[in-house]
Length: 163
Image (cartoon, rainbow, N blue to C red; front, side, top):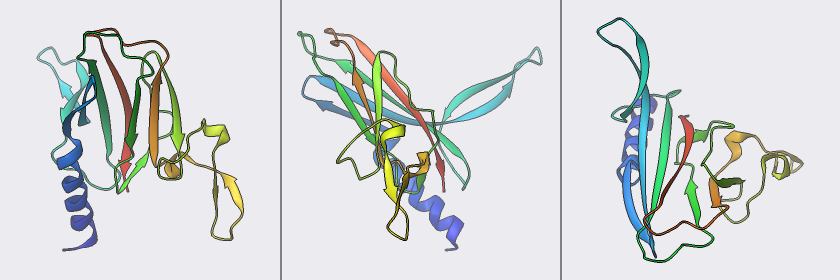
């Protein structure tokens, strides 16, 4: 197996647990979907872009991860925090993480600590600190500013590129 085929194989294996993952965290149901943009032309000749489930990815391709969450309890959920690792073999694409009504922070240390991009540093090969790049991010965290009411839904999204 050559390196590109191996990379694609490992990436697709990682999607088994990520592409359509649903779990319940206490009173919050969480689902993650991995998609790619695809250009289509309608019958009138208009071009549009749509999201389609990921089937194959080659190095350089971008994957769009959408994390949806629902309060399945009868009570408001306070301090809702959604944390997602940047998948293995992927590099976060800078300034693509967002979620309506959330504050987004990042980790460069495997999810131990979080901060805004201007607060994050990493050490280079010589041991000197430098500002972190988006490709250094290991995790993304979205914290809702308000309670999530019973039955309410939210979502968060980011892009990552296959290395």
